[in-house]
Image (tube, rainbow, N blue to C red; front, side, top):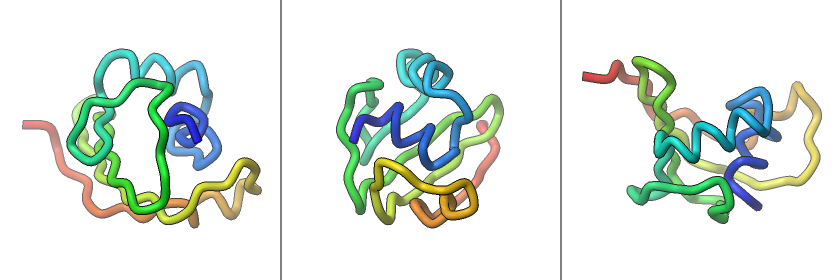
Length: 85
């Protein structure tokens, strides 16, 4: 699955266009590599997302095309949240 679509489906980012912009700005890494919107993600990958003044590290648990709103949080596990220094 594409990174921008995963961010939208998992509801880490609300809209896919916003997810694409965040990716294009270089604010997301997959397993330590800067990621583009079209980068493929799979279960077991580790994402680091920079939201303003906060770094959120997330491990992808599963990848599904469609998921209900209340089940979206089961797609990932938050490993850490830290302020940007």
